[in-house]
Length: 496
Image 1 (cartoon, rainbow, N blue to C red):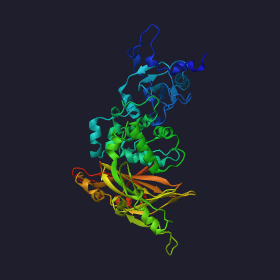
Image 2: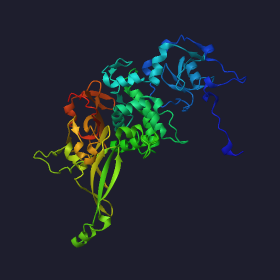
Image 3: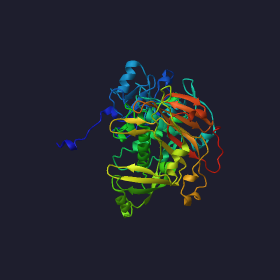
């Protein structure tokens, strides 16, 4: 027999028993088997954690998995000889939840449990958001109480650091606090029916990001933190292990890859927009001039400049974020032998985009002069401050502090003149600030985010969440920033 034609059969307990049809062609009705369960008081909500991959703890299969609501472990199947059935008999744990159908069962008796007191469990597993709830999120400052008694603000919750994923945590936290992006992903129907090619794994990023958004903003969580385990597993898979959980990555590299991958998975192309491009994409004009080789005689250089090859070219280019270059850090020390940490105003490094400032770019063979000018400002503008330079031997970090106001940054002067009239509003307020602390390869990430409902700032570093004064934010080694355009003369609520 041709091995390729051999059909692989899953073990019997892998089949979802709810969907089995009897040999006589009759469906066994749920109603006949549904009843109240005497074991509901054995459920232990404090051990329930639905953030991890839905795999059977014994077979490691993801098909037809049930959570034991007494000990929190996952088991496959519920028929005779199944792992859930055996677990129930051996330990007298009777209440199980099918993680796919969201139905509750009592084992080993194998009947469906219908009880409204279990709704809080299904909501934690799969939070849902109405339009009314979504629209009220940024207008209220109501604290939620977790099952363990701790209070938290939905959206301002810690993310578990599994090993070395704080670089990804900070970026995911920042993106989860961009309201139009968040609102799109809170409603699964927005992207559930997007058609993708067969075998396309990239859509997994979209699904997992949506799940993470709903968990972070869940007002009825059992605990005041979330594990990004499933989201990060999708990142490892979809990035072909370029980004990992066990190895520190670069926040800017991850942000760049993630936004582009998310946009592509949502069906975005050069001509087709998605929510990602609607929120973050701007455009700029790039002026490029080729330079003669510096070792050539002056006369020859002068002659070359008249050739077509050395004339300035202009291209329009979209961007998802702007890279801001820091001036080279001085190497001298003060009298106490301490390195002086230089400071630079934000507007000095923004001058790169004024259409006048020129910067030299060197390739292996050729040198170019480039200048940049903005032609379209997006609703949310991302700055990436270039702190790291890589050479053949090591990575160097520039510790220069950027002095920036928290609010009221007007970018009109960086727009090409003919586009200024198109932009009614060009003023931005900071909503997220990602910081890199420590050495280039061993450092850690933390993030400052603005909670729109309270107008307060919070600092998050993995599971740790604390409030912070706005003036303290500007003292950090900012690495990635997200700024919100103030539209329709919005009032500034930040109190800064």
